[in-house]
Image (cartoon, rainbow, N blue to C red):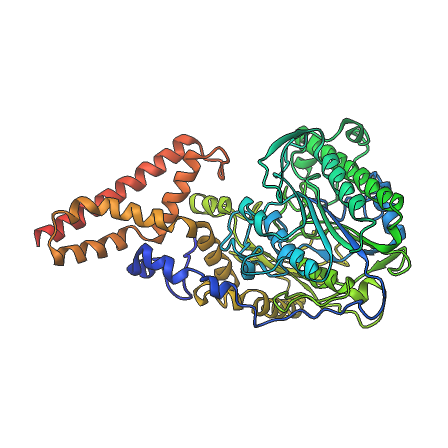
Length: 599
């Protein structure tokens, strides 16, 4: 990494090393009690309890990686999604809905617990600091609804670590293991304790079959129900959409957004991915239609709140990036459509700034009860019902804490911003402001520049706007991040904050390995040393095997041993770097040891 990466504000690596790897883990670690702190915020959930006598059923359908732009009624009329179109005509679209953390695991952590990533410990796809947040130390949304008298169900992709399924609290739980191979997926039933078994066939169909079974089993019951259907498509893979839906997108009838680089448009492989991506969206649309038909056939459509959304979007070459996990609109802006016949306005478009963090208190409010105090979002029940007085925050907070691949790449290459780049950002209706490890990343005027092509971050004419958005970001950090992290992981400088946490969360689960590497290297010398010399060797080890050393060692080890590479360096180049690091380390250790033993 070309920049210094302080572990605490103002503390450089060489100073931090004096404490050694074991102390580093203790100094930087987040205790369970600190992570679990919830007294600083409470849910502000308006409820429908006094508005309607009969409690509604709730069916919450969410796909994986469906961006807002890829819909026939937003920006892509070529997209074939008649059922999503029908749902939007029958309900209300929230077109400023943002994924708080636009990757799979943090979204699901927020959805299940109602807590910020730092609060629940579901930091990123790479990092989970607390597995007890799902139903052990923190009730899930299933527990909340169950306590309110609901029958609960979950079907589909989980992505919150397999062991947490046992405590999730759903009465019915069909756990589909990821499902990126959409035609052969491991599935298990959680309540019965059965093992995974392989199911063939397009998994969105199988997931919807099970969800419809749940609806039919509970439609005539004496309890209302809450069902979550987590579909894997249109998530990667983008080479296996059903043939009949892939055929809907011929080569000459699939436009790219104006902010997509020519090299993306002209790459056959990427273009095939783009076609299959939209094929998956159309396939998901069919499954949504099947659910709509099932509610009609069961005679409960009028008594059921049906929601369709997604956990995040995908860029496909916009702004030079190709995936999720970035603060551009293609990744963070997601579909959100809600239908409740006779209650939610039909054919309406709501402009409220809605975020993932608001979903739990809103769903609880629609069911007629208030979310627990540990849920830190706002209730949007009035907004869903088209009533005045609904919250409409100035902005939504966006965050990616870390990607190990990004950290390893940054340690070995002086690269610029790229995919999976950790950031903090705020998105309002007018402007989006983002920062990363380099500091200010971008400021876009979303109204004047809807494709986010003119970066205003360094434009003197927009300095006051940038400062205003920075103040918004400060306020969100104080609420969503600061109460739940160690002080050493904060910084008044945005770039430092992002770098510190990316490094910490990328390495923290390897601190034991760091300590072991140091101890193994020192052991031959410690066996020959007296008590005073042993103390000197400990200091020498901390000086040589510091955080800077371990970061580079870990990056090289990862690149040389994994199939999922982070850099474009050849094996030979990586091996040369590793040999040089080992030689330099051995020379320092030998020279220092001889000096200590000769004294």
